[in-house]
Length: 378
Image (cartoon, rainbow, N blue to C red; front, top):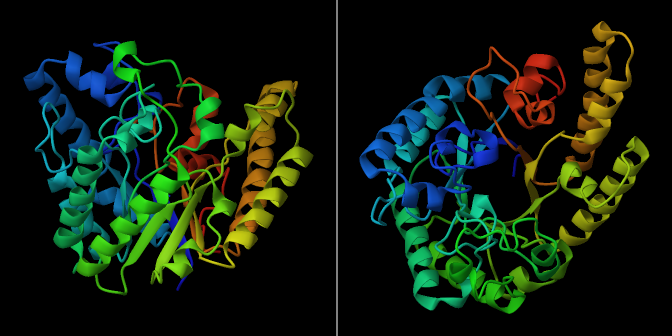
């Protein structure tokens, strides 16, 4: 398998407020579920059409391919087919993505990013502070059927690399330390929330695999997120004779920093060395892909602010970001591949995002400033 060099197209079909807050301002809501609950349906439908029409276009696929990227990971919501009230479906945009990808020689990993009542309680899971999807068999079955419908629709497309069955089902330690825990807009709705047990996750993955493999050609990949438990899968995939599968893990220096009071390059090196060992252990059983990563780190911003001369600020920031990018890209070398999060945040490239740290999450801005190699395939 050729190594994946990819970018995520997040915040297009699945909204995340932190990435682009404008759509949420009128309702003062924190996630896509509550945005739909509190908005005027007709007005929101127009807003969503404008967003989806312009946030990612054919030109973006052309730009992505020109930078040596060979694949995009596209997060999709459980209401993608437009049959879950009050949400606006978006399947026609995924159709367009396949046309554009095939035109520019890219492939697509379709990623089921949200489920009803969420698999992690994050805004990226659809609704903040609620995490009880796995406890409701009818909603689990609904999502299995969504995966089947996606497989039937795109299974024969040249542009389909594979399907990721679920993004970031949360583990016990991550759930207990999650900043979203206890932040539900409706406390009553959040009752019964908790982490996604390994026993359930294995059962769900096995069922999803069996259903998808019946539909997909063997050459199409079925991808599973590690559930924040990279080294805990042992021989699960081999024992169940799963063919052409990948294990997705998400590694963020920025997330690691949240647990430590200091920032330093030696710390990043140590953190990535530990992650590399975990990846090597997991890859003895199944190929590992870094489904999400970015160069965002507080050390680069701290050092840039410490420079006395204003004209040296950007030079300092660029040097630190390039150093971190080099460390991370070197760590990913022996994996099945990697996807940057995210291709962009705010569409407007003429101006910087006011919160300086956010700019390094935006791959287009990283290229613009020279914070990351212009071609990731070199």
